[in-house]
Length: 358
Image (tube, rainbow, N blue to C red; front, side, top):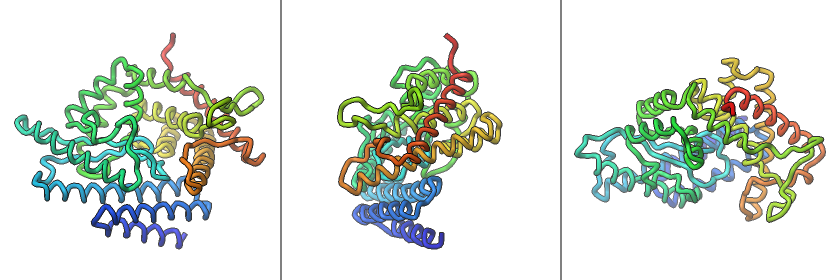
């Protein structure tokens, strides 16, 4: 524990001492080495999440600081109104270990009417700079353009409130995806009143009784964990991932989605999966014993996923979240089967509470 704390503190100070993107690129490589060391020490998954999320948070905040200074040097001045940079997706849930593709957004306070266009231009340019800086530091750009460099994801508070209110009605399939990504937002800088206002709007428009929970549940229950009769693994039958299971989309994401739906219904602003689970258990929304099974399942699946992705990364391969379950030891296969069985139960429970009757 002493060695781990010392190494973590050293990397954190290394990040915060950098005043160039080149320096932050090198610091990012130190973060990768820290992850390897933590896994070699068999650090528990919650510890991995906590430490790596904090390192990525510090790295991103330092990039934001450098980009704000660039804006001032280029004559745009400081931010015209307060704003929050928002991590979304796995980063927002504090579940990012390896540097993956970006999911981020920005919310800024409503400027005076005659300053609205100038403020929108400022923050969009700042978003472009930060997104580019993150890309240079190893966080690849999102193919779906869910980034603060996209006007759709860089908005004033009132624009975001209107969007959230719209999500409270009938949602198209792509809007369901946008909503699930946004509901995992985590602010990295700026005043808290902006994100507090977002959560208040979310619970007004999407909380208990809203059609959104039913729509999210219906979307989640379209797919089930890859476990067949006799608890046989159901793997890909063809293609580059033949005989594999995707531990993200076919396993971990089901737990993430179900607990997000419960959290939305119960007014929980915590965005990490394990944090949501703890609060739901405290509210008795999920049975305490069952919550322990869910936590064990999530940690086991994420452990397999992190280990396999890191192995591929070291080999120069693309970390793709896929694993060949039949190459695991018999005990590991039993652990994975148990985890997938827990997901089956969790989906049934989610459907029971939130699925719209036909």
